[in-house]
Length: 167
Image (cartoon, rainbow, N blue to C red; front, top):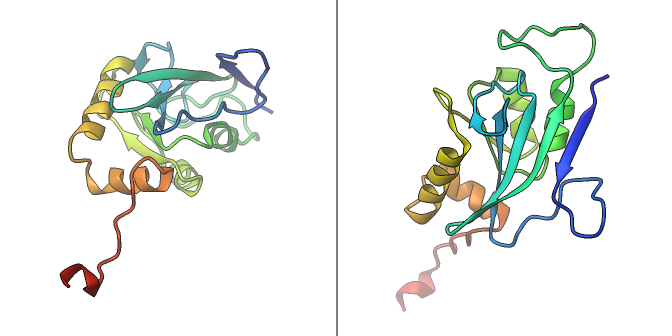
């Protein structure tokens, strides 16, 4: 069985689960080995840096660490345990997941948890990922991001077309 460690900023109480999301923010998880760069495949990520991102700022919410991970070829160090489900469970509440790669079965589990996976072709700093996310939020977001924003309650859903609009 793999263990999960949550490192969170707390005020005066210990959180057993992910802290509440900042109003108007998009919650973003980034697969990382070093907490500085997006540099891991989903299955091999030892950590996920979780941020709340708005058009103006971002804030580190928590770092989620895992002991038993797959190597980048998808092979497990020890057989038998499911390493994907605990990761998906730990990331529930996130809207976007940035990683270098993610396998089909893992992507299906992530999507069913209402997390949109985004594969990035090469490593980059976490700051670059967050700046790019803010740029997408500030400008006209692509359709897939507008849908994520609407489901997250960050953007208003479009009103349905009504004949009364032309009276």
